[in-house]
Image (cartoon, rainbow, N blue to C red; front, side, top):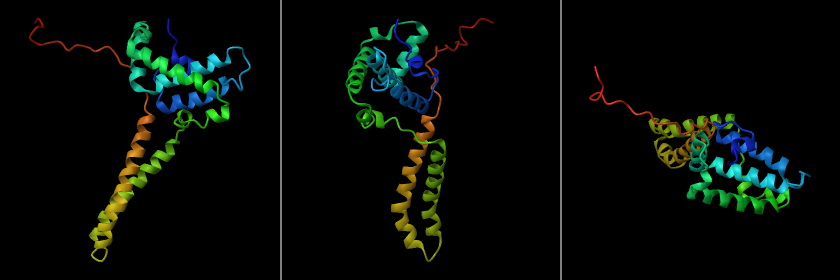
Amino acid sequence: MFKDYCKVLGVEHDASDMEIKGAFRRRAKETHPEFNSTSDAEQQFILVNEAYDILIHHKTRELFEEDLNTYHNPETYTPFKHWIVVARERATVHARLPYKEFTRTKFYQSTHTSPYVMFIAEFAAAIVLIIIPYFLMIGEENRLLGVFSLFIALPAGIFFLVQALAGFAATKKFKAPGKKVKKSDPKTQKS
């Protein structure tokens, strides 16, 4: 039977991306061979990295959750097996790095999360930056300034809006693929 990656990281099966990132950062420090003195410290660290790598990508996570619910081994599915092999190879390289070097890798750096309050602030800033050019164009003496602000404030506002929406999406709980329920055809129903 394959490993339950959610248990490895200590998260629920519906954990959001932010929860997975936070759990990975904690577990990576706990299991890194530099801080873990057990004989299988390197294997524990590799497993934590592998679990994070599979759970943070939505396609592999969907396969994992679907197969977990059906008690089917996803390692028999070639694309999933490929991602497990890639994750283990990357984790093996990371396990041999000193912890300080590991935290400087692009892989670890991608696990940083912003607080929820930051997403709200970005959203508010985005709305203000998107609205400002229009108010400046309404005023008769500031029309030229309003046109110029369209090229500065509006793109900045859109950027902040995209960042805020991506942050809100990262806080949403994961919905595991469920069984599809067939709708009954009214023509075939008996009265």
